[in-house]
Image (cartoon, rainbow over all chains, first blue to last red; front, top):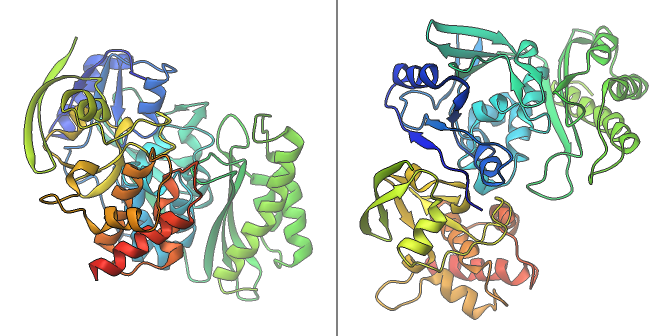
Length: 290
Length: 156
């Protein structure tokens, strides 16, 4: 399969890249790792007149803690996340996520920024970033602005990024002590999109009660979904089995999956219920609770 | 039609070429350079038959534009043998019957080669994890794992 014709640009600086996007507007698309975009172009499900490849832009690949945030460069590869000791030791929810995105070869090219900016509700990072209450940095003609993750996803494959903005950084607030998170994905095989997946991040209080909680759902609707009612229910509660079951029920209520080869609506909603309890149990355990 | 001049080093030889923006790396390798060892399987980033090394990392060459490989070092299955001698990974697939139809084999060998470059003594789960983006529809994976283990032992 061969994509429809387009022109290709490989600017050397962020300013040049933004200028190209500004000039070509909706006719242009940012090429990061290309692991979602190129298949779409090949299948002719999308076409674009100009591809602006950001591979030469300096300083877009890093993973570091700085100023109360974990900062991930927009072009950071999933394989870098997967192999990072910082991520494995301090952000296990992100390690879980990187490990189940596509397959190891795809992860050598796929990028964290691309996974978010592509805004496929079946992509894995959106739910995790919802759970972590992340924000993203968008660089455009007027400089930088930050977008809270809840404001990023506006529809199927749509974000609040302007046509001339590039997602340059993801910022995750450094979790306080006694925090933990997990991402649990049900997939038919390695490399498949999720049938359903749940991201859960918790912080425990002094008595072991849930003090803070973030939960995101993958492949559960036209956009990534925050399980807000389940979050509200959990705060202040002791995470015993009964509580996790109720959280699962509330998360399943928030899910709006559609039927496809991976399952019916009822089945997927049921899987959200089951996976929520599992993700929460793993998150609580990692936070040092039981 | 937008074209670009690229320089790609493939198996140690630099190639300068004029390519269309939309030309995929796998077509550049197979149709331009006549290196047909790299296979096109699913053409949708699933099967890994088209896996090559790009700057030392396995990549699915059906999901990479030739222009994205401008300036890169590419290794294909043809680059594994040296002076007529099979690389231990190739020898392993021979000795352990790691192939039947052979379609997935170039990708499997490139992925195995990259794994052993990073990890000289991989466990079976590590091997299975590494090749989880390469599909075999003939033999199952038992002999493929053995082939990579054979190569690991030879390389140690």
